[in-house]
Image 1 (cartoon, rainbow, N blue to C red):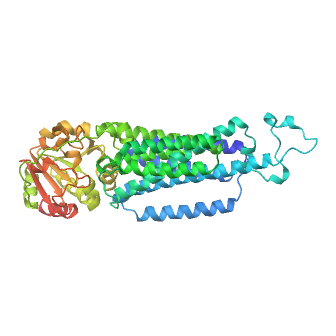
Image 2 (image 1 turned 90 degrees about the vertical axis):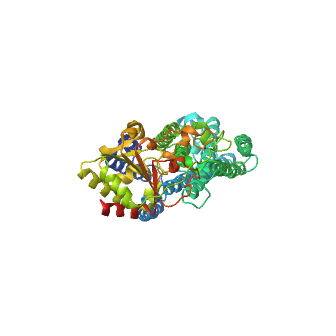
Length: 497
């Protein structure tokens, strides 16, 4: 494949990637958008493998086949409830790849520089005028092709720029790798979801960053590969410490933030390899992830810089005491209230995903609508543990798109609603966000479910949930607790209606 055909394929792939991102704006176009992304990535991979200067194609194809099979197998085994941790795990692979590619680039650069310094000069009578910048032609016995040839043609300034790219790729990649591993652990329940920092806190992160910059300066001045190896280790610690310092309530932002980090790592490596498509793709992923993180921070009333620095500037002080008691209710009571209600709003959360209750909820919705009741869903921007998590679950259960509304569209309607059913949500319906300035979620926009006439909360038990934040809603006079597995509770409710 010639360079012209490869460039054309890269342009088409870039267009498909942009169409893919644009199509994810709503559920109707999302399925088509996914296929744009699949076709674009397949085209990009083929154009890269069979492009000029690529060697060991057979080994590359074997590696791609193995990785493709592993991805297909894992994706087939993963439930929708486990998608957040799967996404975090995939981000870690991107970061690790950036580190390995950066180290490999440095090794190849040193090999090429050793060739030049060892007397690899043009043969007698060679015409240097045909080589840009008067750089000696590659000796016949050097066997440099592809990236090696690109390195040979670089002058001193271009080598310096390459080292900056390698440093950035390794630093961002290492932060992404360890940060994603910790995010995976928190989302999977293998690591405590509460914020945790080592003694020194943010000053420790700052000191590690300064040390990385010093090592970077040494690397630029020819100190050797040991400097960026240390950068990778220290940056890995920064990623670990940053995400450990972020609480469970902020994990949806963390997932999108790590997505952004992985994109910037890919872009930096794209500059290193001279691959335009990798630069564009990394920039698309990095910028879209950053924009999503910003939007989610606004939805949670979090400062963007505060979150990406590992929870800097969090609230402190004693939280508001709970008044009253949680009052339990049986399925018969909920069914009776629904029979008398004209308007119903269902608020899904991660508990619905864990119980895999979305299909039962869809059947409940259909039955209530068949009875002429106005049934809608209220979706908070950070419901679940992944942006859009609830929308995907409801779409999977064939809930009509037009009754699934965002928080800003439906929040004013709660005061005119007869019954609200909350399934596995805590923070997004927590009035402490408005009433308690010392709450960890103080100032976060929430769904005003307590304004409805009756509120029923489907919950496994009386615990505080994943983020560990107490919810005064559960103690209000118009709230009743329906304890038990969400799927079983909704199925029982279906039988009573």
